[in-house]
Length: 561
Ligand SMILES: Cc1cc2nc3c(=O)[nH]c(=O)nc-3n(C[C@H](O)[C@H](O)[C@H](O)COP(=O)(O)OP(=O)(O)OC[C@H]3O[C@@H](n4cnc5c(N)ncnc54)[C@H](O)[C@@H]3O)c2cc1C
Ligand code: SF4
Image 1 (cartoon, rainbow, N blue to C red):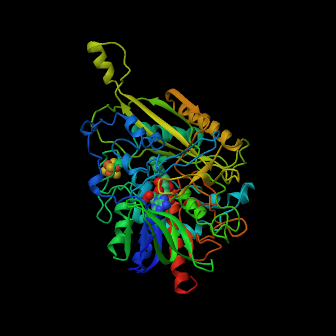
Image 2: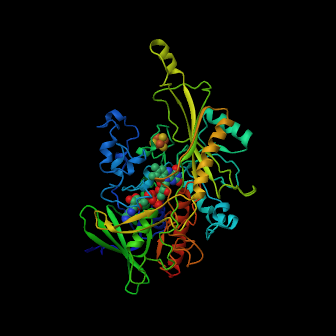
Image 3: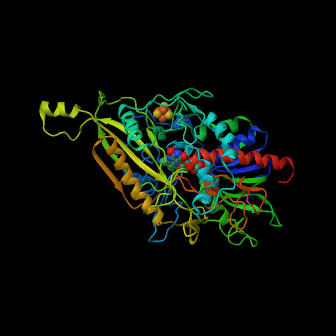
């Protein structure tokens, strides 16, 4: 086993995605020496293909069976395609397992600098006190050990740097932020927004997303080419690879160690302090050690908890920093298998090949179980919807000849909305190490146990019913709504398996994402979420990471780390 001795580091950060990127930027810009261990290879603008037509690809982006050979799980979500598949984990080399009756699609497993932010949907929403203190309101689960006022300045800071387009709506339960000018709604979106407000009092708004409408820090505004998940040469969406990580590296204080698969956190001989990380070089398959004064895991929720479970010691035999016994438990993800679609008058719009493509649509704010309403009888908590509209040729037009050509050009103008709902944190949704399976690097893999409860089932049904209700209220035609059971699980917003809390007996982390048990060990991704509100998580992941880094630095100054 080789040891990296030449450089001494203040902090090791594991993972270069949304959370790791911010941790590196914050610490390196403050002058700390940071080693960034990233399991994937470096990302570069040369890999971005947002303007490349499919006919230039070997298989025209039409041969999923080629990708399925190595990435059968990742392929289930369309952002893993012929353009991007080699950014994703090889599912066969790095598997996970599930019980036979609880299939779980762990998608969005990236192995490249920037992690999931390379391909994310960019919807960026704040949580509010109604979310942080939901247990006090409805009696389920635990409150977060922090409130909105604690995180608000960090939301401001992160939003200004990331660049979030959006409109101020004045909603208490979906706080406004530091927005760039919104991307205007299409005609049918405007019609939908107005009618839903007028008839049902619900708020439809331009989606709040990390796409620039004004330049910042050398990044150009979006020019509406569409497929952000293939990268962006003008850096107009937020991807850690060319923003936070680039800034951290530019300080000269951050060293990126690519292809470094963290295996376990190493402890000192007394077992009280983390002294470094053991990792496998994915190219040479050699194990290496690296040391620092503090360790921060930012590898994405399940990956960070896998590292902690693999770091068990005689003192922490069921996983490092797990004196509470809750490590791995309370896995949450969003349910999103209810929604609907409908057609609207074209209002003068025409279908066109090669027209600008808006990379964002609409968002419908949560309307169940709000502060001033009586509790909704069918379920706890709530859901919002992401939506998009399109104007397409009428490909299904009947007939032939001149009549067909005319009918084909009659535009089909529609809106689709999909619910994103909160999943309650339950003990029996959990991850553990599978004692029988290792990845290709010899590291034990996770077994994931996840299923819906009554609350989720009732919520999904309401997502479908309410989608239909809103589309009908907006006088859409051919309204179709759906509400499917969400198994096999569809997950991109997982959280909660090393949860924060004030009570070390019931939680792994304190409000600064520091483990209660080991003072110089932090976990700054979504595993610390005490609950997983229906708003998309990443803006909160990033803001919390900055806040926790500030705390870490203040503790280092006091010499208590
Ligand atoms: C298709 C898709 C759409 C999404 N849309 C949205 C959205 O609209 N809004 C939203 O808020 N969120 C969205 N998300 C989720 C969002 O991308 C994640 O919440 C966010 O990126 C998580 O940040 P992270 O730092 O925890 O992990 P990641 O960004 O995934 O980064 C983790 C990094 O750690 C590395 N890593 C993993 N294991 C190890 C290891 N053992 N050793 C070293 N490195 C390791 C990985 O290679 C990766 O680079 C979406 C995700 C996907 C996949
Ligand atoms: S749509 Fe905008 S943000 Fe997305 S790739 Fe194109 S220019 Fe970049």
